Length: 251
Image (cartoon, rainbow, N blue to C red; front, side):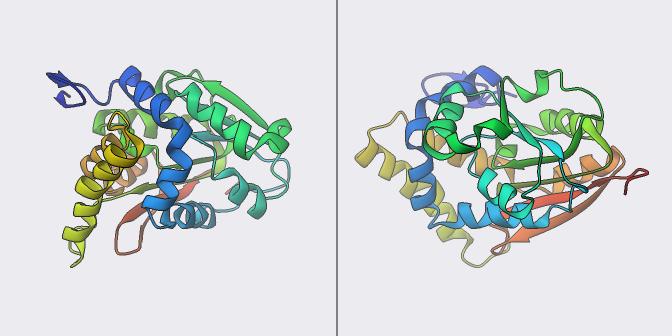
């Protein structure tokens, strides 16, 4: 899928190495920029993503945070389920993981294992997870990659295992949508260009978000793999999410 990207010519913005480069470059500023420019909604949405996930069951649950970024969901996850045994985080960006462990989560390092890899190329063991969570990583995949992700989640979850994912979305039908899109496509790139003198990486994140649409497509794909799925909208559809479980003896 070739679309316009950063620089000249046509660039596949969903190529794993392109995604890695974007997030490696913006990793040092990602936490502050995303919190301020979303007016704090990204933090609230992470909390809501954790709240939407069914309980992973008995203590010592082990699971994956996919496209984990800076790991900002971990405090919410460990607060709600304080008896989680371990979280294995998978992210393609070494810069994002370094930021997560240095600034936010060094005191939780004994419960967190990191895999630096394209999640779709990772050889994660089948039926190895009690839970899977992902916040704001879905937008970096195209529909074909979403299908592969859904298959991966269905494979790695144990019977009765649970999941929850959330992503910034295009709030079609909301009367303030034009202002939302203006903020995403014009204001944020302008802030980055003037104040951060960046390489338009945060503008690229805006492009990913508007291309994504909403989580209805991946909800249908997850259902096609036999998972129970609930689709949710947050703040008039500015974010959407999916949550549910893999049907099995432990359900």
